[in-house]
Image (cartoon, rainbow, N blue to C red; front, side, top):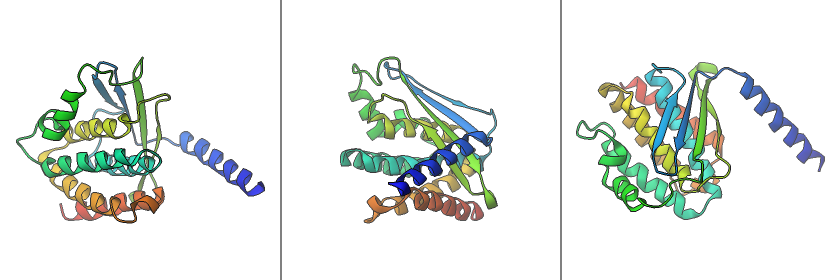
Length: 212
């Protein structure tokens, strides 16, 4: 009992400390019941490194969160990402949601049904840098919210990130995303901690950037 209280206190202290630090980048993703989505970044010109670490570190958080959701959502997330990774640097793709067949089909099939809870859903993500340029994130999920929007809002964010990257940066971002995907979806996936997934995100970003 005492150990549990100590751990809870440490978590609370960590949350307060994290929120007082200044994020290098913050972003909000809003999904309206109509299906319209809006992504807003805290700065007009985030660096490629900030954008790609946001994509992978937050991808790690979403991947970890899905361990507490129905297995089907993880399978959907995996399928979505596999499609996106294959075309991430393609010059023939303008918008991932409308140009990638699987994502377009899902969006079309959902027409007519509310895409969020009444009033909409707002996801907030903040990126911080620690030692040696290693990134980590904090985030807020909408309460209440549709479970499907956990993987879906991430894909909306990935499209917004991709649209802000030059073509050369899209190539190394694709390498990093592919390497992270392989490690994030392994046979031991359900036992991977958030710290391990986040370390993987930073490691593959470092390697991909060095090859750019």
